Amino acid sequence: MNILKVGVVILSALVIISTGFAIVSQTTNINLREEISSIESDLETLRFELNSTKNLLQERTEELNNTISFIRIYLKADGKFYSASDTQSTADSKYSLAGDYYDTDEWDSAIQYYSDAMAYYSNAGQKYRDAAALYENAKNYTNDTIYKNLCDALYNMCMSASQLMYYMYEAAEYMKSACQYYKNGDFATGGDMVDKANSRITLHDEEVENYNNYLTEYKNILINLS
Image 1 (cartoon, rainbow, N blue to C red):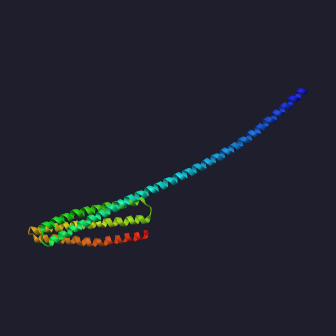
Image 2 (image 1 turned 90 degrees about the horizontal axis):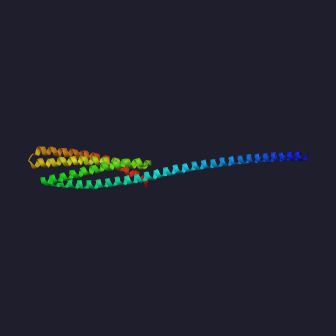
């Protein structure tokens, strides 16, 4: 009888211990699940912050690359523009010298200098067009309205300057022909060539007004940048 009671007591103790373990285990599991959930939430937050940082870094890197590209292309365009201006200056000098020889009826010398002027005007015109293309390309690497407008003004200046070179090339070509006709004694046809040259000079002078308007626009944009 006493043994039976002891067994009952032992069984009761085991039940209590088992129940206690179950409660402790359940509580531990709940705490672990909460801790895991918290860790997962923190990880998700870290992933979001990491992605945000990564995206921001990519945006900044793209902005930096675009800025570098803009400056590089813009400076290259400027180099072409100033080279074109130098070539134009040489062309104008050759044309002026040709005119001096024309005035003194030195036809061979005039023909030579008009030929030289044609070559330089052609070269200058191409350089202006190359510069215009670069200014147009530079616009693709900036979102700044002022810089876009600056490139537009320079593009228009270069295209106008290229047109000026074309008119001067034709004027030199007609004057060269006039000198050749005068040299051969054909003054009537030579006079016709001079008239055609003068018509190109007129067109040139009209285009100068357009160029000056673009130049004024360019200067106004620079004032806003300063």
